[in-house]
Image 1 (cartoon, rainbow, N blue to C red):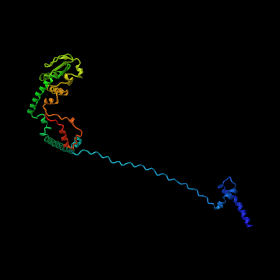
Image 2: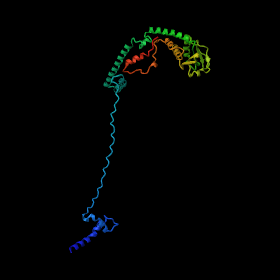
Image 3: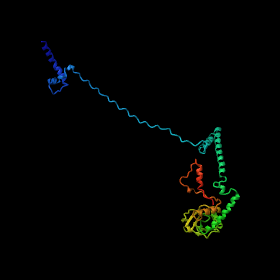
Length: 329
């Protein structure tokens, strides 16, 4: 009897159990079949409900580290010149002077005067050494070019003039001078230029051919007969009068000596000889004989590769410059 009652109670409880497990069974099958198939799972009150899985929180990626910028080294200020050197004075002395002028204070004026004293003493020391080095050194002494004494200079001038006359005699057969001019009213500067060229023609024997742009005559007594311009003024590329041109017909060349201005007789000789040298009518040696200075000029075009000119190697500079000095005649 007790057994029947237990079975009865159990059957009454079964539908509740089946209903509670239906959600976990296949809904397409009868409840009994589900129950039988799930019998191995045991009684429902023993079944342990699976705990919900905790969502794993993904750890965020670490922030990207900014690439460290390279450390900038502090800019080195360029070193200035050595204090109280020539370069230092060139930059700073005027600043001290200007400040002293603006403020007129005892301190500023005194500072400027002391600095000026240093600069003047440095200049004096340089001058003394300069004179010592130059004295007796024919390569450096300008007295070797032209004597400082009036007597020595006069002798060289006379010698130069004698040599110039020989050169003039030689050139008189090779070259001539064209003198372009206008009347006195339109070209007042033509008057002094006419006189200087007239004196030059008389002393040198060089022929001067006057060319008039307006048909006016000239006052040059030692000139060749004048001619009216027939286009030579333009052919020579001239623009102003008076104009003086050295021409060498045999060499088919010319050299403009002057235009638009005037020069005296002595300047005429100097300019004429230089122009003759430029067009190759005389040689460098011939020209040098007509000047008071007898020392040849240094030709720097002969410098070879590797020439050392560093200021910290003065000995090398001296030795190499000496190789450029031509021998005296």
